[in-house]
Image 1 (cartoon, rainbow, N blue to C red):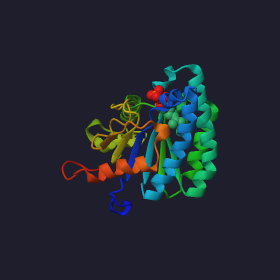
Image 2: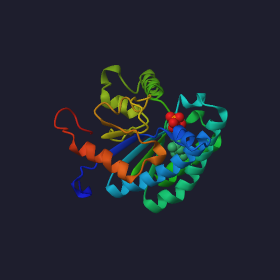
Image 3: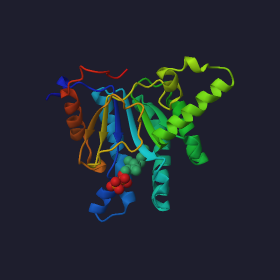
Image 4: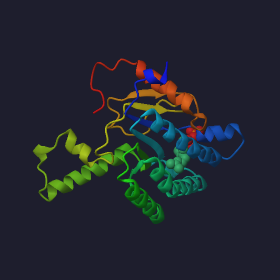
Length: 239
Ligand code: FPP
């Protein structure tokens, strides 16, 4: 299929899985896989942008990932810190609007500063919106949303009868972002792992055995081709 014949999803979400196995196949530490994974992510962001995708959301670190060995968590946080700092200039150059979703309050203060700086410096960019889920879990996101909602009722800003789906969406980390059209999960695992459970209600899912560090533009196009060929006439399409 020609790229011009493809139906390009407005919003792609990705569970980047398989870094550890990719490194193990090469007799290297798991963290080697994460470093390569971060490079791949940078390229996929560029590819999505060039294809006309408007939103890319990636699962970088889950609320459950803190249970991993200390050294591994440290390397992911170091990568994340570097990524946030270097992204300021790259996002400016490429007109990318960056946003971090998840519970930021549990991250280290310097990482929170780097997030705030990146979000602030890129907030008026009009190109692709790049959302990184960091210390993210869907149940945690919904719990935080419910807490904020309850507070709004408590202080009299909101009445319980006024609550509808859009009220709930307003309190989610992804407020103002359309739901994903396509979810990609790499490495052969077929589950959601607490990722965007509210937002993926009507999304097309694509699973591939390819490990994240081996994922590239050709693999991305395969996922988009599959998405393009699926019949989405029935039910709701993304907002
Ligand atoms: C899953 O592979 C990957 C992660 C938990 C971390 C994802 C992180 C990156 C791609 C790099 C850092 C990201 C940024 C934004 C700088 P896994 O470790 O679960 O692999 P396995 O299933 O083979 O063990």
